[in-house]
Amino acid sequence: MKLSDFDYNLPESLIARYPASERTHSRLLCLGRDDGQVQHRQFLDLMDLLNPGDLLVFNDTRVLAARLYGRKASGGKLEILVERLLSDTEALVQMRVSKSPAAGSRIEFLSDQPDMPPLEAEVLGRQDAFFHLKFHCQGALTTALEQYGHMPLPPYIDRDDEAADRSRYQTVYNKNPGAVAAPTAGLHFDEGMLKQLSEKGVEQTFLTLHVGSGTFQPVRTEDVLEHKMHSEWIDVPQSTCEQIAACRARGGRVVAVGTTSVRSLESAAAHQVHNRVPDAFAGETDIFIYPGYEFQVVDAMITNFHLPKSTLMMLISAFAGRDSVMAAYQEAVAEKYRFFSYGDAMFIV
Picture 1 (cartoon, rainbow, N blue to C red):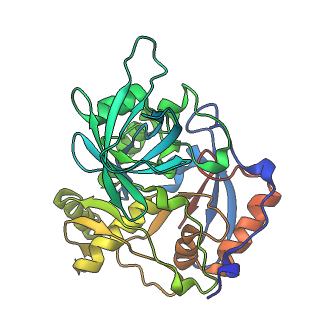
Picture 2: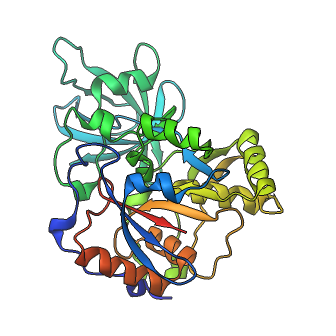
């Protein structure tokens, strides 16, 4: 497999820089795994496309206000992106700065809110490409980030974050803080749609994958198999595994909402799986899914449109077939679908 096998041409005008006026008002491209058939629908049509007894699996991670702007003791400006919380006061961060601060040095971050004192942090050292910081904050670091941080919009959105992004770049069911990017397939659901699906008999369950900034890192090797995946933390609880088992018993479909849910379920299955039901698992995953992979748990997938030559293009190509996926993307471009995080959705069945 070559990286170029997962490339496609995308006019810049089709990159969605803002979400739809309402969460559920996106378009939905339906793709059949068996025949490659494409249907053009609306996201609300999922009410008809999902069956009683199906199980939706959501990623309930909460996106951190992970981008902070500050300065060194010398006055030099810097920008950080929190990559991973280590405790209530410590984190690993990426740092954009002209000269890297030494271990033991102090930095401070400013809030857009008036009358807020600077948030101070100490550089404890480095771990590979990341800086290890200890924040001197009152209470949990997650609270301080809400006060001082900005939403970490993906680079292709190409604008500063705005007040509305605080809610629209979160799913309505977010619960566990720790991600630096949203599980974007879930952005299309609102409370009303979730309630209607539940009333129809479509079951819902949750797991957690804290999306890291590595999700935006390009694949730099032409030979796909030489690519090294970044690691992310997941938690697939026992209650979710039990709901999957019940879904299997009643003949329903396990429908993963987003590639993060797919990666979590298949990672858990890689550790232990019985009759297509994974065992509970919490820990690190660097699973790399590309064509040839045999899916153990997921029957159908709701996902957004992904960047050319990305590992996520490889994942959905593994699920639906590369030729079918590339043809569907070509049709989505021709039909002027909106692409990426704030864009339209696909339902692969």
